[in-house]
Image (tube, rainbow, N blue to C red; front, side):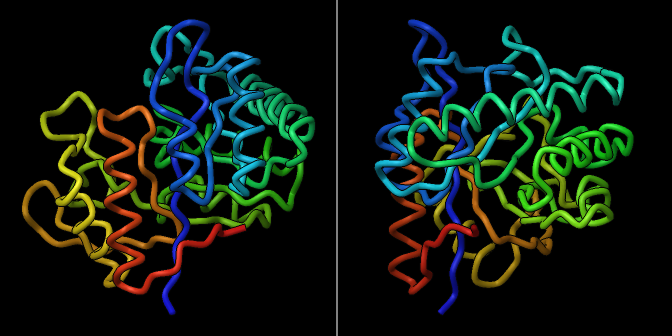
Amino acid sequence: MASVDLNADLGESFGTWQLGDDDAMLGLVTSANVACGFHAGDPATLSHSCEEAAKQGVRIGAQVGYPDLAGFGRRFIDVAPSDLIADIIYQIGALQALARAAGSGVAYVKPHGALYNAIVNHRDQARAVAKAVHTVDPTLPVLGLAGSVFFEEADRLGLRTVPEAFADRSYRPDGQLVSRRERNAVLHDPAEIADRVASMVQSGRVVAVDGSTIAVTVESVCVHGDSPGAVQIATAVRDRLVNEGVALTAFV
């Protein structure tokens, strides 16, 4: 039987500003990429996310990013590798403490936003992120884009790499994500998204923004928790996969 992990970015509310419905999403996904306070999230929010994930049996991942609360971590920062290493170690450590207090632990690491996209090609930053994860715990898997220099650097250090695909994002013909600044970068129709995910998981193919069909490697599927209709999208994706005999199982 085919199986795949279903993940979502959670814990991204801040103070009285609420983003998404984390509790509902935790009833649908198998892994939760919990913000670490640099691009989003505050200690109380992150603590709650970890507690609810632990109750639901959902794996907790540290979603690390640039120190960019104002930009939600979606702006590239030309940070020195040594500073980036310290930033990533700090974020993982903070979430580890909150996850342990909730009776769980950090099971993997996933970069967020602009950092995720940067380390597809930016080798210095990719090496820094991989080194930071390895320094904290060399057994922690990392989520990312197949074929990225981040995966090359992670492989070099012996980290487990887990390729993911995005349910609600458009792809370029080269397999990278269409920039959020461009039209139709984010998809919203639950039925269309469910169709795309079924194709990615079962045939390893997806239609790119130019109409071409490209190959994708996927062990985990991401549904963004901050997207409008995220719960409906995650429900449609989950139902479609289960109905087609795909087991939803955490990768770690």
